[in-house]
Every structure is written in structure tokens, then in C-alpha cells.
Amino acid sequence: MSIWRTMRRRVLTPGVAATRMDVRGFHVKSAEGRERLETVGRTFLAGYAYAAEAKHPTDAEEPLERVPMGFRGFAYEGAAMALAVRDGLPLGGGRHVERFLAGRAADHVYMVYVGVGWAMARLPKFRWSTLYAPDPLLRWLVLDGFGFHQAYFATDRYVHDQHRDPAFPWPHDGRSYANNAIDQGIGRASWFVAGADPRVAAALIGKFAADRQPDLWAGVGLAACYAGGATGDELRRLWEAAGAHQPELMQGAAFAAAARVKANLVQPHNELASELLCGMSAASAAKVTDEARIDLPPDGDLPAFAVWRGRIADAFVAHRG
Image (cartoon, rainbow, N blue to C red):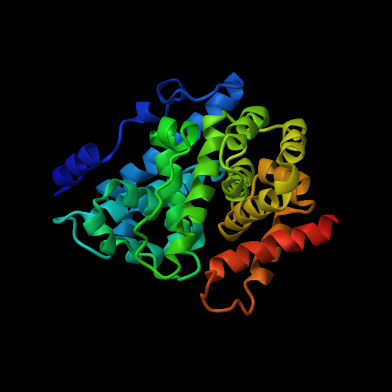
């Protein structure tokens, strides 16, 4: 059986070359920036491999917990993708993601849901019903993960040509909002495509239709805070470049801060980005997201997720004046 698990890992795990910026055609700002973003990709694939080989989902926890704190969330994201793929395969068994979230992955729930979105991009649509994302608020992050995957691996189509599915087959209520959540993921991937260069990121987002740019800027803020790669001066330039979309930039950065705080993985670059973009510490920004969840209305014309994001943005606008 151990031989079978090793074979499963080798067959299911994408090649690490797929995360190299030269292979992807992404902008390289500096050697340091390139190393950071490529380490994110390598760590994601390492987490994927741990889960692809694991006999039981929680068997992946030990190697995941050995990943350096700055990158551990990406390893959990990759592991979630692998487990969701296994759930979706005809002979892959079931309930892998569910059992994963019952363990240490619960602290990484944001990243797990995003990882499920990566699997969504790799599975045929008729298997999407196998994806486990029960929280009606957070499951919109599955679409963020889907959008990131598409922009990362089909960059010309989704970033440079600004492709958008006019009728995305989201199987839940509020499907008219699906593309907004996907655009947050595309914006997040655009930070990688831009090599964490605020000037390039702003130019990429500026080519999209005006009504898409708020969600894209939210994704940029999320990536700039969670993944990092920018200096203090560059983050200040990012803030200036966002202009009218600074509220969305702050909302995305706050999402990143909340994910880091919940998993106890806050790093200096997270604190720097939170201070410069949100005007407060990562812990305080995370608290804003928690308070914005209180008494959310049920899904209506807008899903509760959209109301939540709007409340977060409004709170930061009030804070920063």
C-alpha cells in the first residue's frame, strides 16, 4: 500500500517546473522577489504531495506542520487541493477534505477553501458536486481559488485577454455574484503575474473593465499582505496606485491578515502590509473582519459574502478617513 501511495503522489502531483516564473512568463522584479514567489509555488506543491500520498487526511498534518511558518499556509492550501481532487476522482474515495478540516486544518480554513477551488479547476464539472465546502459564507473562497488557478495557468486568457465566463455554473445561491469572487482570485494571481511589482500589478488591473476592478484590487491586496514580496515603499506605491479602489485593497489585505492570525502564522511582512494598507496591526485588521460577520443578513439579491466584504471595506474607510 505504501508503494501505491507513492505512485499516487507521483501521478497526481504537478511538476515543480510549473511554478517557475520563467516558465509562467511572469514579470521578475528582483532575484529576491522571484525566490519568494517561487517558494510559495514549491511549498504549495509540497503540501499537495503530502496529501496525495497520505493514507488518511490527517496523516499529512505532521509534514505540513514542519513547513516554515511563513509558507505553511500555502502547504495547507496545496494539501486541500490534493484531497479535493481525491474526493472528485471516481476511485479516490470520499470525505477527505471533510476529515482534513476536522483536524489541524481547521485553523487554515480560509486556505483550505481556496485549495478546494484549485481542485474545482482541475475536475470536470459533473464532479463538482463532490467538493466539500459547507460554510455558506466562506465557500465563496472556493471561487477565489478557481480564479487564481485560471489566471495562474491560463494567464494570457484570464489576465491579458481579461476572459470572463458570462454564465459561470456555480451550483449555489447567488450565482450572479460568482464572477465577483472569481475576480478576487484573478486579482490575487495578478500579484504573482506582476512579480509583486506594484507598477506592473496596477497596469494589469487597469486593462480590465471598470466594473471588475474593485474585486481585482481586493485580490491584489490579499496577495500583497498574505504572500508578500513588496517593500514598505512599494506597498505605499501600491496604495497610491489603487486610488478609488483603496477600500477594496484594504478589504483584501484584511482577509489575508485574518487568515494569518487564525492560523497563528503572522510574519513581519504581514504586519508591514497590514499597517501600511489597513492602517492597523494584523490582529486588529482580523478583528475588523470578525466584527463585520456579526448579524450578517441571509443571502438575498447580494450574498452575505458580498455584504461582509462591503462592511469590511466601509470599516477601513471610516478608520482611515
